[in-house]
Amino acid sequence: MPLSERLRRFMDARHIPYSLTRHRCAFRASELASVEHLPAWEVAKTVVVFGDKKFHIVVVPADRHVDLHELQAALDLKHVRLATETELGELFPDCELGAMPPVGILYHLPVYLDSELATEPMIAFNGGSHEECIHMRMADFRKLALPTVISIARLQLAGHGW
Figure: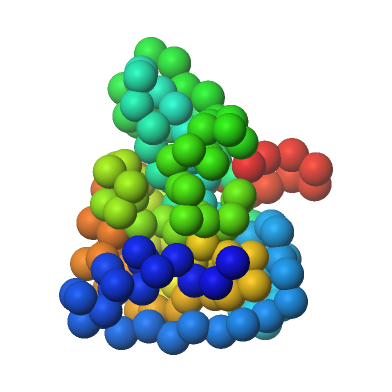
């Protein structure tokens, strides 16, 4: 599946500069960083959570994980959990499972950007496919996605985290 046409039209209509690269299939954000020869802290991992009857997009560096307890407290949620694969398929019908872009406005979802990632000059992320990567300036991403910046990521331990 190529770059989400919905995302392409959205970026183009707002005159947001970006570049698109193609690479071998990468299912995890850390793999995306590797195949794109980028530092993991510059590559966005898009995590979708469900809390208090609403879905939320959480964006953290590829080498970090979302601390659900901290996220729950930061967003003042009574309960939070990861979205299921079925839910992801329904929320992002134009994307490959797990390759959703961190642009919640397209899907009527709020976006929360980790404060560490927000300080990077550039950001790279999946655009709906596991074989393509979007690169843009962080300032442009923030104009595009309108995220709320919060501290929500922690170092990822081997074999753990989302």
